[in-house]
Length: 141
Image (tube, rainbow, N blue to C red; front, side, top):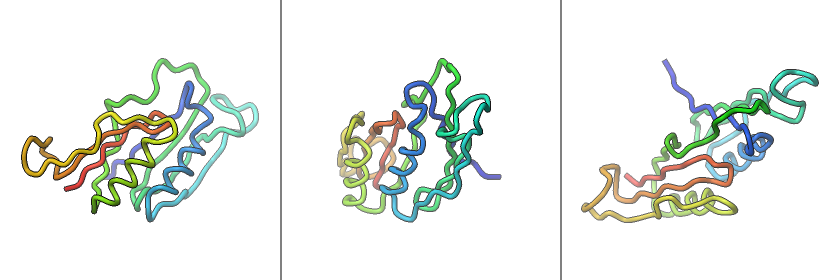
């Protein structure tokens, strides 16, 4: 059995999936876009410039993506986020700055815990939302 994060770009985010996966694969090491299938002309749910189905990896972990122009009553929410275990403070700082910049937002600033008052995850933690509305929790264990 395998679980894979699946990001669906709808509403205001529809049309931004390709930009998002290009951004993510440029920010995370060992990342690549594996495949992109676009809608055919006249196909329900999208137009030829939209991604019907895509697969990409972030540091070797597979993710899937789709977007459609149906009128959904939902979009991304911080209730579901991508949790990233960082190997160093410098890696964590770079990722946090990249993800939260250019229209993103800091939800919980990067904080050192030094063994007291932590969330139980690790030594340092931060939570942000990127410019596409996807939430990221970064942790230094």
